[in-house]
Length: 508
Image (tube, rainbow, N blue to C red; front, side, top):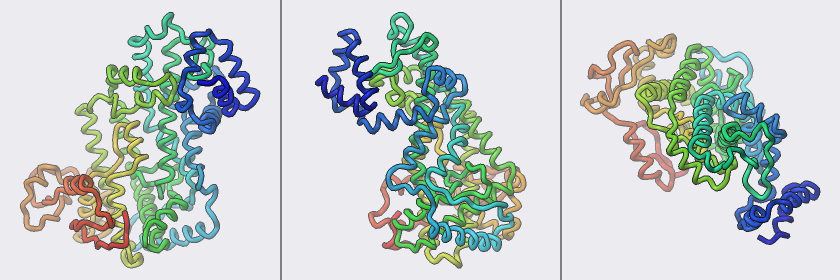
């Protein structure tokens, strides 16, 4: 690399004064190291704007001094400040609104008021006290990232311990005398004071930072996708009344050939139905937290796979270490206890989302002309998720998606038709009263003429007795086939039995 080129790059990254100081540090390095640094391909250097953005994130994340870094390692497995800073940079990126404008806010508040009235006619749960928040993308990040970090903490702790173990025990030779001379590889190695020269301590910091960076990037990306605070099927906000991410709802409506008022009403119904359920069923969120915690605490890291990821890292910096905190690459397959927890979690998610789907449709069918199209698109989105959710899956080791939402919705609809809305909602008064989702065996042997029937027995009955309360349609298989084949180019429904009308005018 031309010396003038790297000198100019440093000045553009750090400013005239700090850039010249960095160049002086390089000029005073031993000749072999200096030649190695200057031999780098200029095209592989990050853009100055990216360097400045990362420096701002690290400053906001409390990584200004070595004392800050030591304190970060001691405080917990995830640097939540850093994750939040990185997420906010993405959430506030180009095209993101910093406030909810008056016109959109008025539409959203009026829609929420109407949706609550519609729900009163079909739901026994009372409206949640307080107001539904109208959030920007950054507001969603600030309101939910602490919850994500809490869910991810057990996984992050396992990751940090594993990274430190691998680096100290298996890659110790790479450190020569057992000390680390610089913080990050690159044009300007940052010297490490005595207190941080222990490889294990330093690598814990790098693992902590790597996990925080990945979490922040995922949350920042998801802030452009979510439209309500319950989109992941969990209560993530401290406000029990929920929230609407107005800009994302407007963008979603713009992508459809459906009036924005209808789209807003449908999403408001979903959000309010979730809020009523979680507020009324006090055991629901603690049950979710217990199941997620049970799964996360059981995660075991494959040290050989992690060592391979670390050896493949281009340099010892947080971005290059991202593969080492990706559970799809370094996690050992689930234990029986984890599989049990995951199955329970998926069933509970399906029951929640199925109930919300059922109630939303019943409340809105007389008011939202295109509710069938919106319902079908919502079902597909909730079953498959998006890129940001896949990133969360890499960090948490699980997909927070209901696999059998259609079955659950049909189950709740049947209970409502046979027993009434009050009896349907009373099933949530205790976990043992919840209806049982049909098992795989139930679905495979079902032969009743009415193949849409599902099991509405309480959870404390035998779900595997092979009674008539089964369904002959394997919705998991049908959805997998749909995803494998890809959606039609015009985005229309492919004729599933949910009763959804197809239309050439509506894209997924």
